[in-house]
Amino acid sequence: MVTTLDQAINQTIDTLISESELKERVSQLAAQLSSDYASQDLMLVCILRGGVVFLTDLMRELTIPHHIDFMAVSSYRPGVRESDGMVRITLDLLTDIQGRNVLLVEDIVDTGYTVSRVLDLLSTRSPASLRVCCLLDKAERRKVEVPIDYVGFQIPDKFVVGYGLDMDEYWRNLSYIGVVRI
Ligand code: 5GP
Image (tube, rainbow, N blue to C red; front, side, top):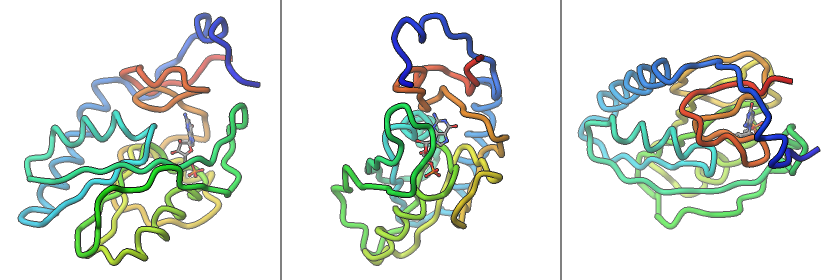
């Protein structure tokens, strides 16, 4: 069932990760990345739309020069909160990544289908390196193994919203990560 505006207005969100916890962890990740990629050509590839808040906070904390680009995929169907493994690329990069150090910036890795599909595609384009940075990792839900190089938080098997993540397009604007109270 798809969330209606009336339902969204009446929903209560319980905080799972607070704004200050997110800020602190994103700073730590950015410091690590700034060190690991120092003096290297870095391209951040954000998967829309969920990764966009994480990307914009992360890039402003990076102290090294870098480029950004975007991809979009669709795997979840409206009202179905489960990836079906049929991940379609709906928006491709504008940039040629051959010979570049690519870091995939993703909101959450759940079954792993999305990151796996994107890595398969991008690796055919001969980047110098290809790594993954995800804010949230729901490891217990994994269906396919994916290499994750940088993780913000391990989280339990709950459907989370906020900080870019949506429920039927609502709640992306929250400054924290939460769970909709049932
Ligand atoms: P995967 O392909 O790993 O199953 O899922 C990746 C995508 O599914 C994420 O980029 C995100 O868009 C969506 N997703 C997975 N788990 C959640 C969740 O708990 N909340 C929200 N809002 N989206 C999720």
